[in-house]
Length: 458
Image 1 (cartoon, rainbow, N blue to C red):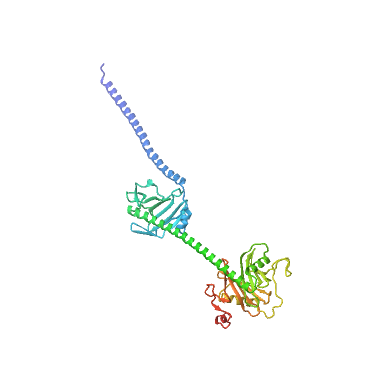
Image 2 (cartoon, rainbow, N blue to C red):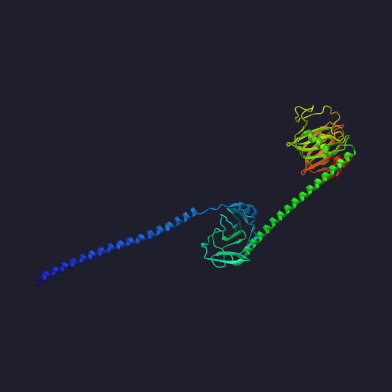
């Protein structure tokens, strides 16, 4: 069918309109699709950021679950070893790495590990040791995974592990030597990575090995010295006891030859007088022949006091007795049933007639000057003894390393006798003389009152 020109024109126009409309529709869809794609692409960076934000949270969780090591500061390597439960912890006096000398380490311990830290400039060398059997603290704060290279080297039979960024350039070295394992960390104090050479690592291992060998030798030497000192002390005590026994036997022999009772008999009388049926300690009996009447001065410890009992060397009569307590106070002692006491207690007594006698203060000065000329004494006490034929003072005090007993005539001030009792129970006679050089012998004779030293003392 043929169309006229107007119809053709109309159809052509309609086609153009439909085509334009279709073009618009298609364009809109493309725009819509493009916007949707843009939205999808824009959302991707947001997802990446979220993942990035999650990583610090994971790291924080790791820190929260990690173990915290509390290091306790120590003054010496010995203290660090003791705190860590190690038999020894020796460190060299100095280390040299990268031409830097490290010395004067500080010490600490924590959870079975001893630590020594050397610092010089901006770097530090941290040495740690722990028992192979186990320890909670770590030998290094660095993890194996932090390093790209791990290798080993044999140092005089020790298998040394080296961790570092490059081969034979370790930052951390670890090894075991017997029952102890060690870790050495070389680090920059500002966080920078530093390393030593393999030769320097070997030198560090040898230095620490030698230092611990020296520490063991010192301990063994200390034990040997202590053992030797104990043996010497025992020998000295035995010799002193032998000398004491010999002196006592000689006193007994001399006393027996002159009709006196023995020192053993005097001791028995004295202890029975104060502590009948009881044991005493530090028992000593000294025969005093000065003055008008020979007598024994028996001393011993009983209960909570040191007792002094004077006994007539011929008759065995108890002249006097008194107790010196820990606070330095002194009381005259009378046993229960004695006419001079009430119910057998220690009590202060006085002498009725002291006409012509020197005072207790004067007697004390004479006694102290005869033994400790120019020096201070402690626990000074003076007791007037009126029993026997001649009144006299028994002056006791502590000087240097001994307890002294000095007998002074109550009228003339003459020193009858003096002796020192040492901590080990030995007794030394001073025979009225000064012992300036502290060797328990006699230096100056005060029996001659014209002696210049005696005049100075007066």
